[in-house]
Length: 241
Image: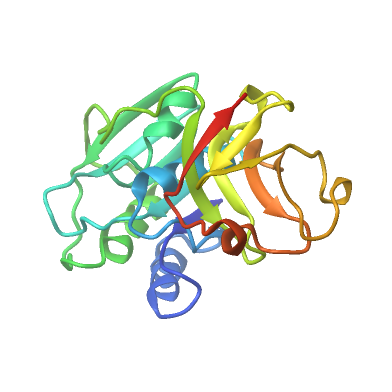
């Protein structure tokens, strides 16, 4: 299966154009819309979200991932194999956390080029054809590389908001298993306590919980944490005693 992960949004022609390429080059291969509202222009935040989704993907998945504010520049197109799954997209930090969490990971620069390559849509012109080639067992011209990691990881107990859903819940890149339930999560000067479920707190009260991806998420029961605490993608979060 081929999984699409990008920041294109659910409107406009971009997803449809990529799917058209996949339908032509990998006919009969299922294409799954994993996510089209990944953190826009933020490869590292999107990469943290992608890494959290990986355990639910089949072991032979091909992931076509495009969060690429540097499209058309000298940033490399890359192919990553992590625990048998393949990831195709830009080498801008998007796949760094996927590779770090894998038991085994390798990366390559994609050397193959299509006859026509636009400066602004490598998702359609380069990455989609390569994803189709991988899904159908075709060889891809490549050269081994070390993945780019744009900045050092945050200190222990520090992270950021990486996604805000339609309810206003704020997902962070903090692993919930590393945060004890007695700890408070601090965002924008607010200290927020833990609850296991929404039903454990009164309506309109804020709390943090371990979400279904195993990440710390800040929420307000029957309300919007993003509005209550003024949260946006990239907002810093801290674990407090």
